[in-house]
Image (tube, rainbow, N blue to C red; front, side, top):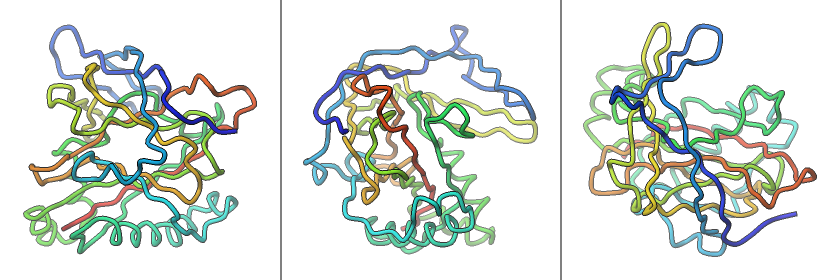
Length: 270
């Protein structure tokens, strides 16, 4: 079963603290995070980009939709962390070199497998967000480029963080991914959210609702398709980040296949 075409859905947006303080989540060593902000759901009309993939690109929209991407990964191999880090990381690196113009160096730094299953370790995120702030992106470079001198040289040039997203179990029938074209997102729509861990503080971005935002999804995305999600870009005259969120598709039923997906995160230099 697959669903295509425009659809109205609920997306959860950031509702900042009423006292004007910085939104934050205190993340203890064990137990749930303690947040000083909340999420509010708004009805959003999603445009289906199926059949219009070539109209969107990383510099204009901060995302791209790629088709006919080969892979040696089988469904069973996703359970092997070693296979993901050797076989699939290599495929993602090659994909980024081929599809992100100007790239001269790629550093894959982590991945997350999400399953729409109450017993899964990581669920789809149903909250409009961006993975990194500019500060957090620079920290990623300094953390994952082991030579400090090289890290600073790379930061002096163009640096992007791009997530490569794909399903693991065939066409997505439930909990798809929505994203807002960057050209429709005003700077004031985004707000830093501090993630306060015991030993450090990370930063993500929450997204406040704005009716001018243009939200899209890609219906029936399959195993041979990829979404490139740009989370950060040091170049200032292009789209620098794309808000995104999973959503409950009202057309899904109890018989719809639970979504399983992987996102691989890479530093892309050049």
